[in-house]
Length: 88
Image (cartoon, rainbow, N blue to C red; front, side, top):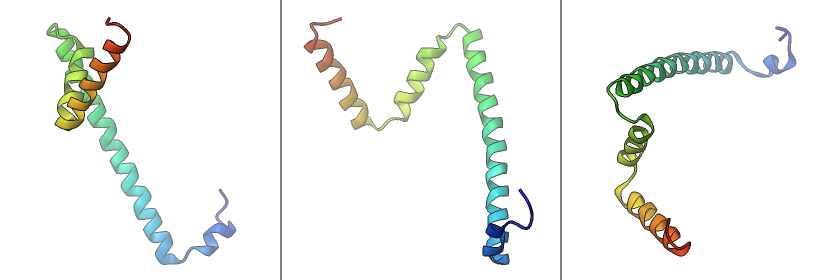
């Protein structure tokens, strides 16, 4: 992108500084996110190595994270749908 772009001319020095600061914060957070994702990958690999089913482990984590009432609502809907189609 050329430095003499008209879009840059429309941003004041304060806005440019703020924009740069935001971009740098986002970049740092993206780096942190990548590190956390790598850590999660290692923990799931460890769980798999211990003989745990990673797919089920992920579901357990998702269920624990969900609000209890939403979880109950989801379970009720699953039961309703299964019943509506005549069972599994």
